[in-house]
Length: 124
Image (tube, rainbow, N blue to C red; front, top):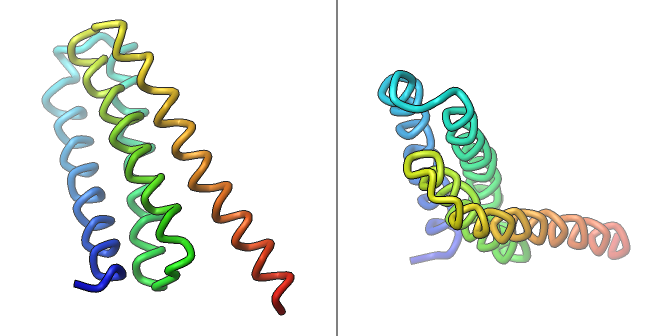
């Protein structure tokens, strides 16, 4: 299977799951979680959906140089968003130590895009 197809499918799956989790949070958790925990949960959904669009875009435009960024975005979703989901549902504080690793993964993915853009400018 072509890498472009894998990233398009990954972006679609991550987006689908993000919408489902958002709906679950809005309807299933609003009366269960405190307002603070619900906001933490929503933050996880928000970052997941933003990076789902980024992954999908990379796949659709078939920019192989950016596939490593898509990988970092996926790692970021797993570490950042999933740790926020788990923390908001369980309130196990140690889970919050994972969240910054996901944030760093997001930042690395975006930095790689910036560096790729700089290189593109120099090539033309």
